[in-house]
Image (cartoon, rainbow over all chains, first blue to last red; front, side, top):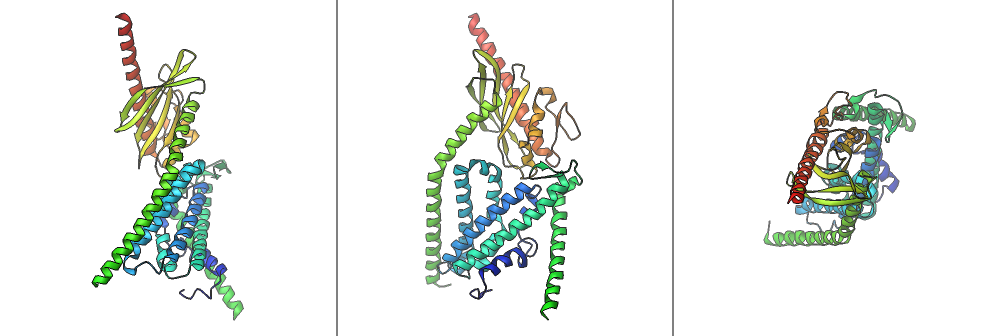
Length: 209
Length: 197
């Protein structure tokens, strides 16, 4: 992965969404994927917030990578992550009051996301600014994608609604919006995702041979 | 690790943290006045929304619950008192829930409004939902009780968020109304005494 000059930006984005999807493939940041996905709106908003922070953190760390002493890289990464999270938090509280009311709770949680620190350590600290930015976009979109799917099924099955609007007039599986249902949803979707990928990659392998 | 390394690492950390701190300070200085202004405007709007009939809402005094500063207000239409509003806090699952409660002259809850909290996203934050908040209309002290079963007489808990539901109904609202009753009665007694003397 160190030779990113050969990899196109589109591949970096695809890599984040499919091959190294934060939740379904790397199994990182599973806590928010369970905690905030019991309705679609929360899942999507959280995904967007993470996308933004991931891109900014990756870009900042990559631009500073030659300056950071390797022995103290972790405290510096943490400062950059929490700095961006706090900036996002304060700016939104001041200028986007309505959105902040809905997202404020989640934004502060992002500081502790393993996925963001992991990308900073694995990618941004070793690569140039542009690829790091696109890696951030890819990972963020992958996270958004995963959270959207999980919360879509959880809200539909648990509450019978989507984005707060009632779709079916019943609660088919109340357990889906409770924490236990989060484990079911993440587990089943993770299995499905990997199964799909296995089939898909087998097929494409057959074609190429 | 050589001495040179120690100097390098220290300098590195100091520089990065200083810059980080500076940036945060600048952002905070820029955003916090707007934030506070927004919070005040929001509180006024929230008071108005709680007592739509009132044309004047006056602050009566301060009180403390869970060692947090709260206020209480009287709502007037013309010269007549039509109710009271009290701010209160409830100890929830992961935060103190900041609540405004409007009561009529008989101290029956008219409306409540959740101003702020940090309860679990997706579970505890359902206390803001209309179908939870609307349950409080017309409840008096005796009926501010949370049940886990279907009920319209009492307050029905949110599934998966019993602690947050309890914090609102049995802590914030109940203690707020209780305080209000005592405070208004005390004031009434004082006023009565003033008039007699």
